[in-house]
Amino acid sequence: MKRAAATGSIALTVVSALTLAACGGSGGSGVAADAEQTLTVWAMGTEGEKLGDVAKEYEKAHTNVTVKVTPVGWDVAHQKLVAAAAAGKLPDVMQMGGSYLGEFADMGALEPVDTKTFRKDDFFPAAWEQGSYDGKTYGVPWYVDTRVLFYRTDLAAKAGLKTAPATMADLQKAAAAYQSKAGTKWGLSIQPGGLDTVQSFYPFLYSAGGSVVDEDGKAAVNSAEAVKALENYGSYFAKGLSEKSVRPGYDVTKDFNSGAVPMFFGGPWIMSLLDENYPAIKGKWAVAAVPADQASVSMAGGSSLAISADSDHKAAAQEFVRYLTEAKGQADWFERTKDLPANTAAWTSGTLADDPDLKVWRTQMESARTTPAQPRLTEITSKLDSAIESVTQGKSTAKAALDKAQSEIEGLVK
Image (cartoon, rainbow, N blue to C red; front, side, top):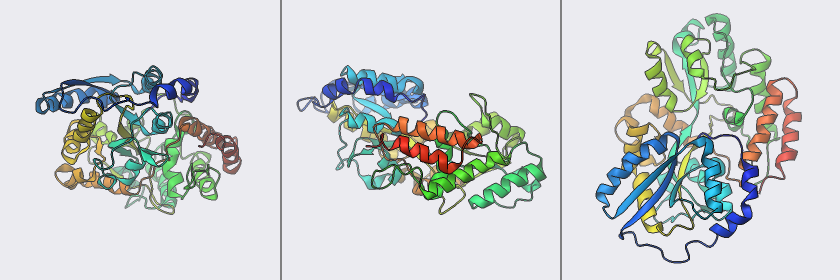
């Protein structure tokens, strides 16, 4: 998922109203799945624009159901969900990003997932975990997202690099070689600061064995592993291998095309962007797994589908969610959007099974990690954003920055 600025303070102002509105549920059995009814669905970004076509196909086979899809921009999604929940007017089904699923589950706004209908083993582990909170599951994985390394193979040859960097040490050596031997302006593009810098940091943190919240549910951002990861991350800026100041709206693909940036970590949608916008470099770039520290571990993102606790159409909503998340529906959704399927059975045939680049994404998803759902996750990650930026700008050591973040985050973790 992609989201706008942290809005935890907004959510806190409506906690009481939301709890009262949502915790009671529908108060009855609701409308039967085979009755005439209209399902309201909110979906965000590109998914919101594409889902209407799928809904029309669904209606052909389910003539008793009208699916009303409302596209919502990611920049306003959180605010709209908060306001709708407080007013008791959430849609029957909603796309739920992992960074705030815990917030809405904690408020009682979401219906627990029927785990007899939706099986954990059908999905990537990290995708299922992203939809879980406090021992229960509230979101069915819809699509997954992770980060892998994009690199210019033609410039690698000039730099004397024969293979993609396999370790974090290799990654920094490659960045230096691209600059010194291939003449690139930078060695690696990683985010120096600002909103969601933590997403750029996650591959370094997770591969080093670090975490934001540990297995016991306690803040762990100043662990030895996390400090090591941030020291490594910050060294790219200290050595001039990465740019310290990136303008708002920066598009790394432009510099990747020109050769100013030879490596960056990116999501799956970037492959099609490169092919469509920069055909001249087709065949001159490739993707590879995140270079390993203790292991090769990337972040897990994507979205889940959740049902409102107050919906009177839960049976029909569950049927629609099942249609979207079963293997066939997931394969169809990939063809429409290039979103990576969360259901692993969708990867067993066609392009998803045969394309060597897509195999990199599948392998990375098997080990990908997600930050455990927390009601105040956006506030937690904003503290990490600040810590990372203080290091990349040379204002603090990694240890001091993460000690400060730890003290701030401890009170936010539930």
